[in-house]
Amino acid sequence: MPGRILILDDNMTRRITLAARLSGAFYDILVASSEGEAHAIIDKARPGVILVADELVCQPAAAFIRALRADPEHRSTTIFVLTAPGGQNGRADLLMAGADEVLPRSEPDEVFRARLRSHERSREMVRTLQMGGDEGQMPGLSEAASQFQGKIAVTLMLPDADQAEAWRAAIGPVEGLQFALAREAEPALPHATERSGLVLLGVLPGAEHRAFRMLAERSAQPDGDEDELLILAPEADSATVIAGYEAGAGAVMTGPFDPAEIRARLIRLRDRLIRRRGLHRALKDGLIAAVTDPLTGLHNRRYALPQLARLSAQALVAEQELAVLVLDLDHFKQVNDAHGHGVGDLALRSMAQTLQDNLRPGDLIARIGGEEFLVALPQTELAAARKIAARLCRAVRETPVLLPGPQQRLRLTVSVGLAMAPPTDRAPEDLIAAADKALYAAKGRGRDQVALLGCRRKPTRRDFAERVGATPPAAPPTGTQMRFLI
Image (tube, rainbow, N blue to C red; front, side, top):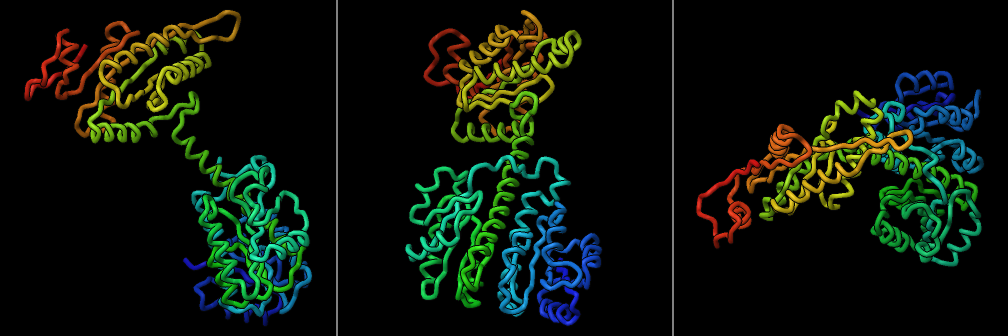
């Protein structure tokens, strides 16, 4: 579907002219002659881009933009303000009001469209991070301002070091930003919150190649492509401006050096960077939450199944052993009935902590049911797996749950089913089912113990030694298969 653009201008001639300029660019063009008409169209059609004339009769453009930005649904809407040719005054105020760009109506079409494409890319990134929805529609995926503390790094890149120093002094301090020249960016930003930040690139006549080379070197560094880029090109031609946007600039500022406008543009890009970081964090947290059991903090079944499949495949390729355990708290229903579900939750958390304390960092631990847990032990032979399973039984038995109240403790036990993965491709559900079958055997024999179900496989020398208590033969008999059920 083509992009939808709303033109707000109370001058009919300007509206018609601008609509005609955009008609061949595959945009759906809407027009409004007043603020009221514009709001009605915005509420119904939800345009992605709004082009506002700076000379509205009934309401100043800045007031219209502030009112629009006050609505969270329009935070991602691109707003351009169109001014008379050569208009410079008031650009900083319009940017501070929330305009994404302030540009003359006389700007060449190819440059104007390059600016639009840049903002469309930014808006599409936000939509992607929101997983296709607005923040209000996706709980947990809106950024929290409290997460962003400290200062954001601003790296000033200019081939002429003396000119860079002069620019930094002229711009002056900006709240929430910390400036450094490119040559000193790494050691000079000890308080910056993250490696990526804002880049202020100066492109001077005759030094365009050097400037873009510096930018390419910066982008090649870790997280360099996460920067927000502002290009200052006071005397740039259309080709240079377009090249700047193709290089990923959030804005290319032409015309006279105006410290107030530069500060306003940096603040706009700072806010965009903060928002993107917040959405990245929220999305990451949401993905983690999707594979984490909220009660115990362990991984859940959604995470465990593909991880178990990966461990099984690795064991098959490397011809290594893989042990799978399913553990179930004994008489857990009685715990809930006698003490309440709050104590039951304490018991589950205690169980999870006991598992974490008694297993290796590379072992897979997950809660896969109400009181059922899964453990996978890569590169673990049968004898070692049996010892680990017995140790887990003992650790649970010897770790009472501390209950609210003086000197109250709840003793728990756990039954464990153990299965050894065969040296053939096998689905993770089948491995869990085998361990589950062994678990039922442990429950049937009185609980608080380990039962082993060995999947069908060729015996090893160690198997023979354990079974007969003697020195194993040099090689097992050809074609012999064994199944353990202890």
